[in-house]
Image (cartoon, rainbow, N blue to C red; front, side):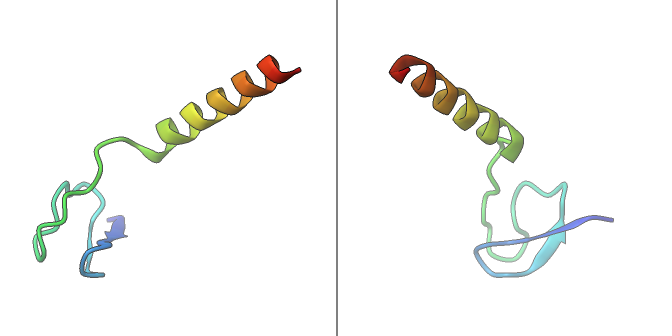
Length: 51
């Protein structure tokens, strides 16, 4: 089973957890790939406008 580290308390929890069972840290719902796609879109748009 895949694990992720809680940034609040550094405990490893299951990747499917939405809240850390130890400290209550609420993991972000938005996947990292979506954030990257948004930044790529913004950068490409700005590049196109400036050229």
